[in-house]
Image (cartoon, rainbow, N blue to C red):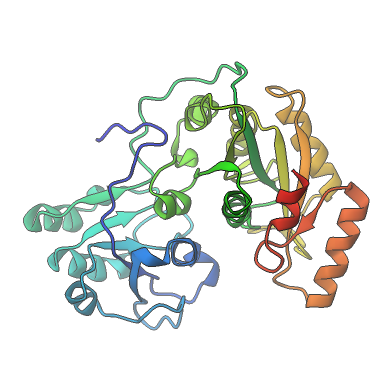
Length: 340
């Protein structure tokens, strides 16, 4: 197994051919959507298998057509419960290998654990990139104060827009002349920018240390914009969220929330927390390593609201908490960055 460090470059060859799987589960393809949104120049096309009707708006190319057009890496651009390679996907992966493409996966299961894929990769001399794996040389966190400034996105739940929010903030900060870097902590972010750390694949004791390594000492006016994961209120993923809060040593947190979501993702018996309770708990936990941490903004995902209702809810949250409330897909992050 290759030993990787946080921030190490993933040597993925562009252009990519993005695989959307064989189902119509929209939320499952956020990896493909993220890559296409934030690194479009690296994408040559998309392919959905079986009877899937999913699309992210890229040219629809067969594996053969993509290879002929110059695709270098076949990206498994989706995630499923359990993070395994669905047997339905294997024929497409094997076709890509036979066409000379490397394979990139952000799944929990390693590609080389699947005999047919490992054998084909060896036969055709292609590389299997398990983006989520290989972090075996991390240290435990120590909480020692680091120089530079840091923003961390946190959430009331999973899949509420933490990655999109941090990418939008980093992009806007650069436009406004800030010295800022996006720091990826999930497989999609890593594939978008080419470096980072898939923190949910790190052994629990090393989560905070991994984030300390991801965002080390820096110049006093440098900002690291750290992608959040999970939620303190999600019983499945609260552990990684807490490790991020401690390791990031955030100066500012941005609370991310999806408007009108009624229950924790996949857990209908658990209600989404009150946003004020969520803000207070995140600030309390973050204060262990940075007593001066502050709420800097609220990112409200308004995808299920009308334009008018979205504007009303954003204005209500701004008035209540005294910080900018924005939807990075609708309003952008300008108001938040200006408030810095």
